[in-house]
Length: 268
Ligand SMILES: [Fe+2]
Ligand SMILES: [Fe+2]
Image 1 (cartoon, helix red, strand yellow):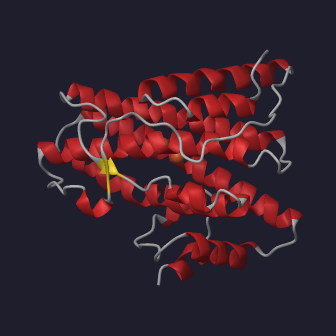
Image 2 (cartoon, protein in one colour):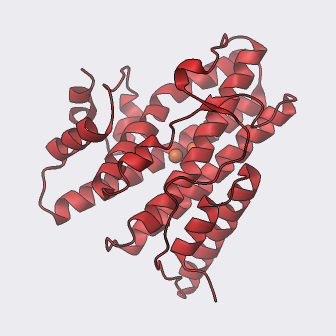
Image 3 (tube, helix red, strand yellow):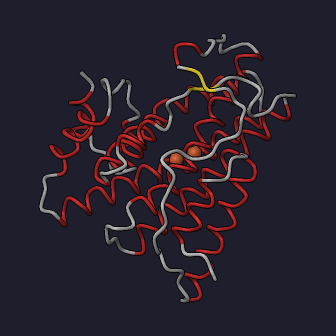
């Protein structure tokens, strides 16, 4: 029996090893897009996603307050930064696959699935790029502790597709657009060309993930005749703890369809 898209997603979510998870993710994405191109579409189907995805036994997951801070300019600091980004990317792979079976009960156009499969495929590439950089430095993903609680946003919005779109792509991934240029600068100053080019790929591709969030959020608002701006504010206040942190990357946020009146009122 050929797998449905939801079954593929659950297979990725229940695979623990990062390289194995991302290999499955990339091959399922290729399968989905090949089938779409041939007009023999894979059904979305249904499958039960785990409450939490499987993860490798390392890294050790710590409360963010207990993750040791390292000087960003030092070699150890740069390894810690690459490790933190690898951890975010692996989490993002699971987040983009999770949205498919989690909300399979809400009828959405095929383009919705195309977007999240493409985003998951790109996150898989990003994780592997970060692993390659770590390995070139004699380290690896799992060598350092990482933030626990990255799955929190997924659990909090497990029953609410609107909330998931508001918090994951439109708040968390948009935050990535704010902070990535500063990271690229750190590696550029250190002459770490491979890390610079990997982070530039990530930066360019993340704009579209935020844009997918904004697109489908607005689509759902239109379908339910809701005013997007107050709807976004109330969902972020409900599901996201704390204020959004300026400075914002206004240009990239605009490119991704996020208007300033969406995020500025949440910055206080
Ligand atoms: Fe990414
Ligand atoms: Fe992303």
